[in-house]
Length: 319
Ligand code: RIB
Image (cartoon, rainbow, N blue to C red; front, side):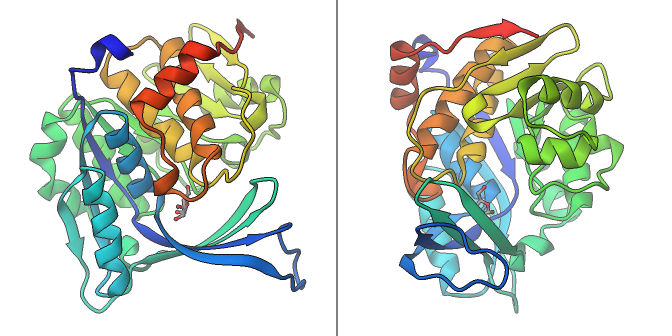
C-alpha cells in the first residue's frame, strides 16, 4: 500500500467515544473473586473513536460523528481525536450526561474483559447522522460499530448506501436483534464471539468461522470477515472463502485490536484493494495493535503496517 500513500481516503466513523479505565492484573477476576491489580490508567478509547484514530494513523482523512459528555473526560477524549488529526466538528457535547466509560481488566497474557457504561454514546441519534450527511456523501468509506443506538447505525447504513459509499459494520458488542439493513452492510467483521452470537453457530476453528460467515452473508453485496485472534481470519465473499493465518506477534493488550482491524479494512477498501489484500492489511494492523498497551495510543501507523507486511507474509488458502 506504500505507493498509494498520496491518496488520503475520506473516512467517516460514526460511533462511540469512551474513557477506558484500565486495570492491569495477573489474570482476569472470576465472578465473586477479588484480585490485586498492578496499575490503573485512564486511556482514551471507545470502538468508534479507536477506529477513527487508527484510520487517521493509517493515512485516512477522518471525520468522527459521535458525542461526549459534559464532564472532565470530554476534553481528554476530544484532544486524543484531534491529536491524531481526526475532524471533530460532528462530535457534539451532551448536556447533563457523562462521557462513555469502559471498565477494562487486562491480564498478563494480553486478554481482556470490558464493561461499558454508554453515557453520551446512547444519545447519538439518527438526526446526528443526518447532520453529517455531506461528510458521509463525500466519504470513500463509512465505519460503524454497535456502541451507539442500533437505529442510528441502521440509519447510517441507509444514508451511506443512498450515496453509494461502502459501509463496514463491526458488530461489536454483539447482539441478536440486528435489523436487516445492518446485516446487509458491504462488509461485516465480527470476531469469533460476535460471529457466534450473530449466527448461533459455535465458532472455535477456521472451518466454524467459514460456516458462521456463510450464515451471516444474507445479501449478495456483503462480504463477511471473522477474526479469530491467533488463528487469523476467515473471509467469505460469496465466490470464495479464504483463511489467512495470523501474524506471529506477542500480545501485550488485545484491547482495540479489532478496532485497528476494522479501520485498516476501511482504508484498504477505500483504496480499492481486493478482499484478500484488504484482509491481509487489516490483520497486520490488528496484530500490531495487540502488541501495544491501551486503545488509542496503541494504534499502528501506516509505516508500521507496511513494514510488518514487508517482513512477514502469513499463508492463506481457500477453505
Ligand atoms: O474495542 C475496544 C474498546 O471497547 C475499548 O476502547 C472500550 O472503550 C470499549 O468500547
